[in-house]
Image (cartoon, rainbow, N blue to C red):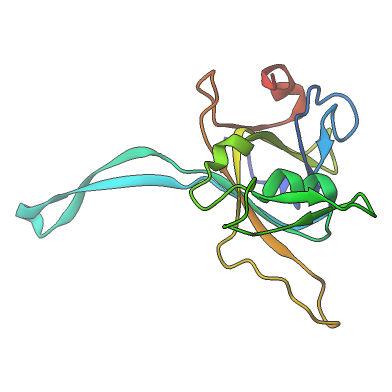
Length: 191
């Protein structure tokens, strides 16, 4: 094993896009930019089941890897048309501005009502680091968008507006959930 080197410590900045087709091209890599976001975090959601030994007072005797429930969370910083349409169950194009706006009317006709299957809005999500040739990319092959349940609009002059969102990692038709690595290594498995 190599000796640790502080030059290898990473501070990652980047952007999100979806539908990327080629990581060697510039951001958004042939896909669609997802607007301005901050406070991104990728959570592996790894699960471990423990087996204990009663004869030794309940000491852990074995640990089993039992899968993962990965998600990428972020805070939307603006009302980008592509972001709103990709994440919210119901958006509409404004008749005057043409910009999308979020709407909720569970009793109205023609809207996605409670119980709507969010997998209908699944996308291939890519975290694209600012230092694209040195830092790792993250691909969620079957990202299911969802609002963070405590998401709220901060209506204040002292803080910027931010909408918490999460993208849950499902399984695509090829059996994949996510890949993390340098673009030269994972570009070939993007499709």
